Length: 199
Image 1: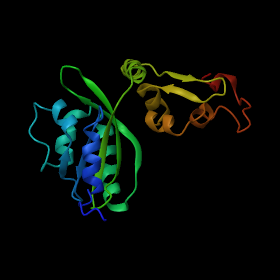
Image 2: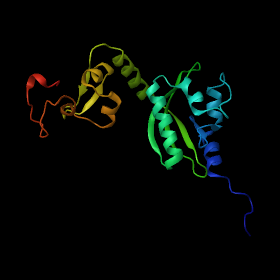
Image 3: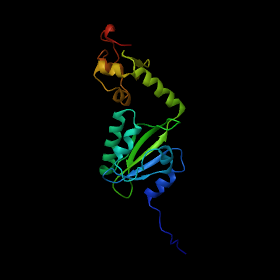
Image 4: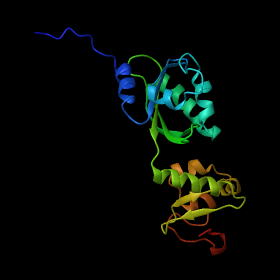
């Protein structure tokens, strides 16, 4: 005996599964217009107009404190819709309700139709604390860089990034060591000039 029940599409299944979790999911078409805004996201965004039928930019713009995170998310969604690939975390979204919930945003391709999947994953308390410290450091006018004994950069604030002409987010993503930023060491770790080394 065969089961004649229709098979649920992967996109619909993903949307229904997202409603069971703390975060949520957004599905767009190839033009980055929102097809699905899961119930978990609707609960958090109740004050705004319905997301379905609006452009992804319109829907996400109020949720991103950092415009660069918004642009990275939109670029990743565009690439995911065309190139059928997944992307790791691209930014942080903050739902402006009474809880001020912060979410990590991940982007991937839809399975059956052209378009993107934007996942919202709750950020842990530890990560929220780290983000608060980062915001404090980024508000300071002085350049600050914190490194491990191996000289790998653990923290670099916006002012330090401006001084060195580097994007702090890119420095963190590429696991830079201080010598790649300041040319103070040879590849073997030898210090060229002690006064040049930020460590």
